[in-house]
Amino acid sequence: MKRVSKCTGATMCPVRLQSTSYSPLKESWNATSDSNLFLLGCIMSKELLELMKRVKVQQYKEIPPLKLLYETLHEIETTLHYGRSRNWDILVEMLAMYHGIVKQTRYLDLYHYLNELDLLNAYTTASLNKPWDYLGDIFLEQDLAGLGQNLTPKNVVDLMIEMTLPKPITKIQTVLDPCVGTGRFLIETSLLRRDSPLILFGIEINIGLYRACIVNMKMFATHPYSIICADTLRLDPDITGPASQIWDLGNRWDPPDMSAFFWKPPPINPESFSLKAFTETKQEEGESHG
Ligand SMILES: C[S@@+](CC[C@H](N)C(=O)[O-])C[C@H]1O[C@@H](n2cnc3c(N)ncnc32)[C@H](O)[C@@H]1O
Image (tube, rainbow, N blue to C red; front, side, top):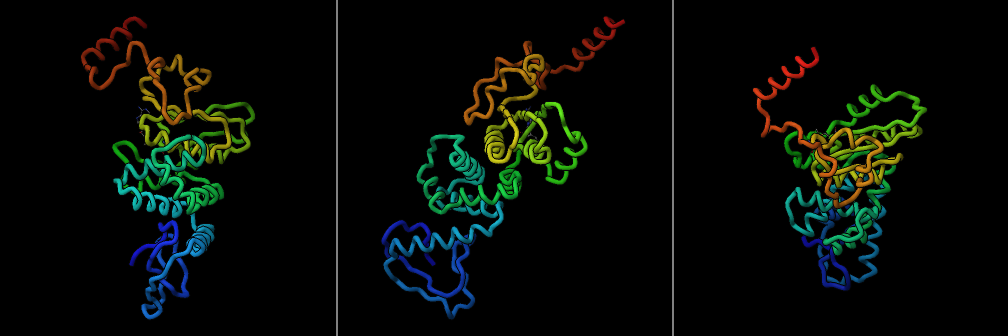
């Protein structure tokens, strides 16, 4: 059965006519029985297409945010035919466009098409009603996580925030997630301490997750924040504190070079590490401290 949703003008298309409802998630008409399903070759008018779009958009209002995001991902998959990881990156980019984080995209036709379907707006509305890191959920469910990229479940995130952040907070306090991932700790901190004077900082080494994080933060954070794309272990703590200029480089789709803020000389890394040299250094330190 040919799909009709991507026709954009008066076109010869097979149409399914029946009295049952349209399912935006399956992009098909739900048939109650085969007997009431038949094909009719006819001219699809713009009016009919518009009507179908309105039915679809109306139904989005009842769909949870995660499903809407999957529906958007499905449209990306069926339009571009890339692999799962690239599709997820494009999903993030489409949302970044919608929220003004990027001004241009290579996938402009796709962006217009998703907007025609009202998917980005529908997801935004639905997720703002129930804010959460849905991008991270899809990242995990699609098996895109590499080594060390397990995101923390919501109930654990919330418990840890309640255990570590006082309530109420009266003086300005900074919160840093040095391995921020898609930003779920910072989002939840912002939501659970909505009325507290917080400033949120995040560092993420992986550019895909970093970008998802800045989309999430733009959508859900209720506090000032700066997320940078960098290797936390290479940042010199003496020059990267809360007042550092490094935080002026945050929240950018294309992150700038951060090397001016690296340790000099570099700290021990796995390649340069030697147990003998490390032991000798520790012994020397012990002797000099008496
Ligand atoms: C286990 S995930 C946790 C993400 C998030 N904090 C959470 O709990 O959901 C660890 C994240 O840290 C990032 N990461 C690993 N090493 C890093 C480093 N040296 N600097 C910055 N980020 C790093 C990984 O890419 C990954 O997104």
